[in-house]
Structures are given as C-alpha cells and as structure tokens.
Length: 190
Image 1 (cartoon, rainbow, N blue to C red):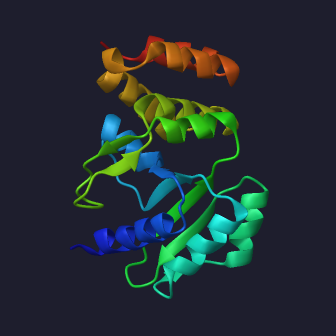
Image 2: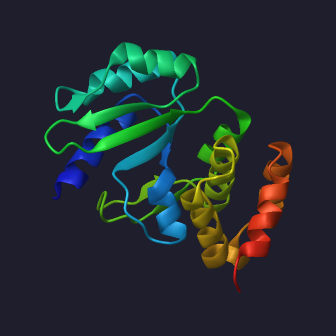
C-alpha cells in the first residue's frame, strides 16, 4: 500500500464512520475524464451536517492535522477546509455541499477504479458535474484560469458523445453558465 492509499483510506474510513456521502472532484476527477495533470491535493465534495462533520473529524484520529474551529466556520460559510495526513503530508480539501447542484452531484457519482487511491472503486463526481463545477470556478475567478478552461475542454473532448447534454444544459442555464458551456463547445476540437 502506498502512502497516498493509506492516507486516503483513513479519510474514507472516517467519512464512512460519520455516515457522510462524498465524492472525489477537482483535478482527480477531471483527470479521470479529461487530460492528465499533476495535483498536490485531493478535492472532495461532502454532504456534511454539523454533527457529521464533528464525527468525521474525531474519527480521523491523530494521524491527520485539522483545525476543528476552522472546519466548523468553513462549513457555516459554505467554504472549503482541509485535512492533512501528518506522515505523508497529503492534503485533502473538503467542499461542504450547501446547494441544490451539490446535492445533485452526490446523487450522480460514479464508482470508479482509481488505483492510486484505493484498490476498491471510489465515488467520483460525474463528468457533467465536473464540467459544471469547473465552469463555476472559471466564472468565479473572472474567467482567467487557463488550467480550469483546459480541464473543461479536455473533458468535453474525451467524453463528448457520452455526456448527458440535457443535464449539462439544464444546470448551466440554472447557474447562468450557458454562455461558457457554449464557448467551451465551440473551442473543443473534433
């Protein structure tokens, strides 16, 4: 077992112990569906409630660094917080779910083999929801992140005909991202 697998399994076990639904997102998910790239952390969306967040943090044990008050404040403000595996310095960024799209993401996860993380399949955000999340981050960042844009176009290029276009169009319309989706489609080769 690698250090990353050990660190991830500890986080996964604590999430299960607290009864928290979760999925891998961010660069790990976009690499699964699009262009490969290096990343220094693992992003997870999670359906925490205040009590399940506390249960999760306490289930992690001494092998992980976190600040409980920072995590609780992040949860209240709908912001991410992180947990760091002490021995291997792997960082896990948690994005608490607070909106309707986030709940939809958790309902649509795909259980995929990601051997770098675990021998067992892990829940991964769907490619459609990864595109939507990346479009949201791109817009929030004033539409300047070339890395976010490359990730979006990479997923569109590699997953293209398999994507649920109606779902993409519905959520980008609701989140006022339809213009960005159309632009990404125009810029996608093939």
